[in-house]
Image (cartoon, rainbow, N blue to C red; front, top):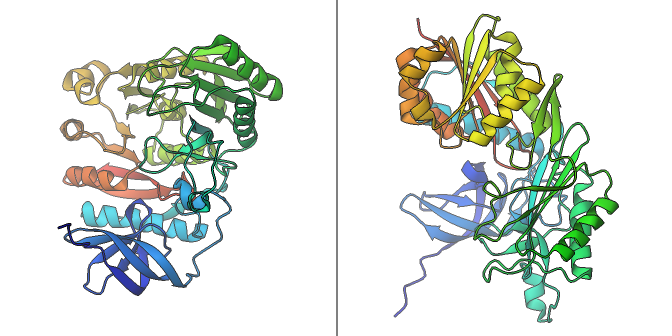
Length: 470
């Protein structure tokens, strides 16, 4: 006998809040919280639960009895399926409210630390078309909409160029128009797809590991340069050059046209040879007169305009006078290090990815910055007492770790040397709060500033300044 269906249906519940990962929150009659992915605070809804845990449910809104005044009409035709811009149906001022609330809740409830008056979140001037990098995947068996499935019609053309359906590694949603990257991004993507279909260039099949076209990356910059990189699974020179020549002729504004031939099991390019077909093998980003060279494998903040605001806040929090030795931990390609270098005596950057450190050194040379040094290696192994003896005791530490936060050994080393000031930049205020709690005995949080880098999503950056307790 099969297991009894434990899912429940609740009628006419009011959505009362928005929580982590973009989920909205309602309360079930039994008092448990319900996390709902397709509702806005203020909605009154029927909910079908999809998962039951000891302390909460997960569910889906099946009917809306009353629409929230926080709702707006999503401009994207793919909104309900794509999953990329989960908050597109919520007004931007409300998105900012819930992002700020999440940061404050994490710092207070998880960190349990004393906080100063928190500055309001810095919103983005551009709430659409703000990304400088987009990656799309090809598929010969695209995701079908519910309407297409229910129609019963035979669909012969199944090629897609778009995004992975959330949680499904082999299903690609065909994207006609994306509102995240400026023109000519949509035109390039759609033209490549149309030309490939017309000329019988095969699209990739993930399960069977066959097909020519694998992924497409488009990078743009504030300087007006455009990079396009096509990743091919099969090595067919005639078809490859046919497509690349078409792209170059159709879009002469592309300044860097590159490709990769990748026949391995996954589509990451970091261990692959990138071949420049036309133009340069890089583009440039600019910020306050600094130029950052970006190649196909480079990391750079994907919202250029808001990255500038984030870096200005970081520099301001660092309170530099020109006499400080600054350590920039998790420096990436050294953008923050170079951005603050003019106001510091010296900046030492540390990063785990060797290629990123090579980019940092090259950018510093190109920018004529002589007071930065960059070192590659596992942070907890590089950032040691010997390293500090060799490079000097830092007056200020800037740290911008990945989502998991700082390793406990790195936190312990910071406590061991006690710099007078720490500026902690985070893309995950929950792990940031955990680290702040570890530092709380020695440091007081004096400033907090959230920055919205990704409008229409639940992601938020947060910058905290910590001063050594007296």
